[in-house]
Image 1 (cartoon, rainbow, N blue to C red):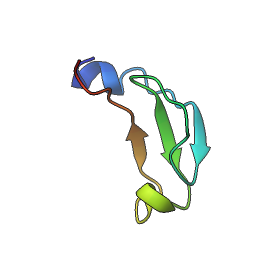
Image 2: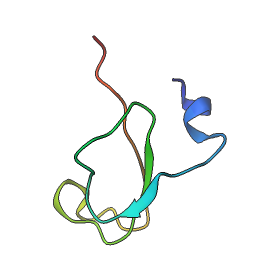
Image 3: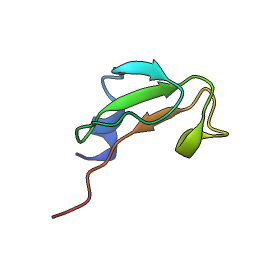
Image 4: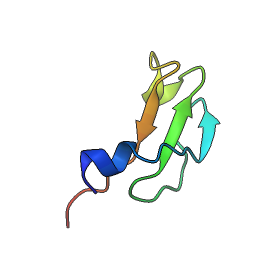
Length: 53
C-alpha cells in the first residue's frame, strides 16, 4: 500500500489507547490516551504496515 492509499479515504477501525493484539496491513487507529507502545502519541493516527516477506 502506498502513502496516498494510506491516507485516502481516511477510515479508522476504532479509537484505542494501545496497539491491538490482532491487526492487518493497512489498519488505522486513532490514539486516544496513548499507553504502552503508543505512549506520548495522543491524538495521532496509527497505521499498521506489515513487514515485507
